[in-house]
Length: 269
Image (tube, rainbow, N blue to C red; front, side):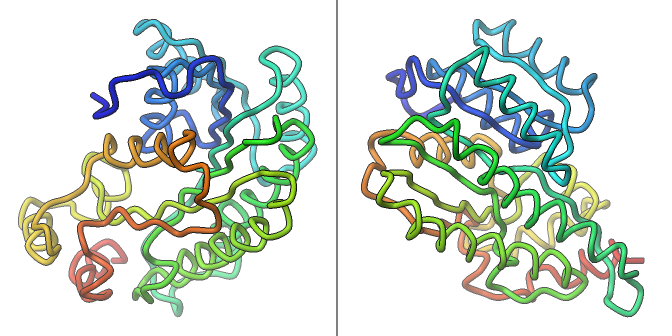
């Protein structure tokens, strides 16, 4: 349930990549709750159809279109289709991402490239393909980054590199596209409960409890908290915020990458 009561996005159009599940789906659901018409983009149509049905069952308006963010032509075609049916985009969330824990010596070049291509190239492709469809002034683009972008973390070299690139891309575009009144910001989640990533990294209750104990706020974050932050950044309440990397991590980044130690080591085996 959102902490915001008014419909902050009434009449707006939002596109969310990676929107079929996890944090990105919760963001799409929150946007729909606040009046936006939402287009979900992901690789699996079946998963998207399920997500769309869930949003519709709660009175929201949504559509799902399958495309891989690594394929610029396919993504561009989907965004063209979305523009034709919903109109210009007010909000774009670049949420598609890949991850697996692995030490560099146990990681192939293709494995490294896959994460960089999904996260960094996918974010570039989404921003570039969406540009001609944005409603200006006032459009907002948000990338779902990670604290790995600025906290070096063992077994996550591919993610650290990709997310650092994502954040710098968003900051650069905030300068380039600022004159068009387009805002670009990153959200950097820390450990978030009930996500595929955290389930993979903390496969036992003991590992989960150990990780939570190291977070300054002594708990995991929730998908709702990330969704509400995305809602704020995409709303008029954040009209003068651009080029920001906003952590939502319970203070995890303040204590460094040691928080991930045991969990990453187990996940990399």
